[in-house]
Image (cartoon, rainbow, N blue to C red; front, side):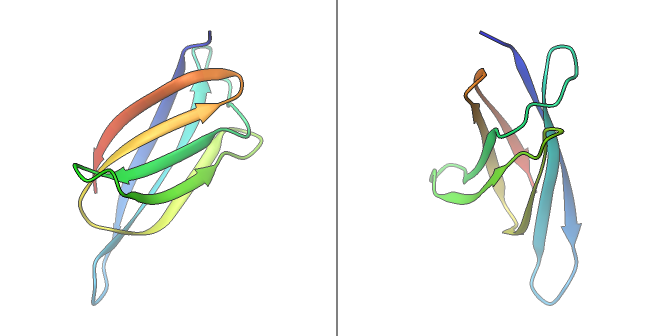
Length: 89
């Protein structure tokens, strides 16, 4: 079972209605990107799925046009165990 790290950055986009973007990289403990991993953002505490992204060949992902609020990020890939983390955006 591999240990993985989900990194993310929340960037607020300012417009008439506020939306945000989350981008990051899924890596193993050696810092290697994990391709084809799924990252899911769910609203906290409701658990409603806000967005799902798949990592590219280097483990990067991006989710756009997310409503402001608290999210829980879940990651799952065939080569690694599931991991979750929380983000305010």
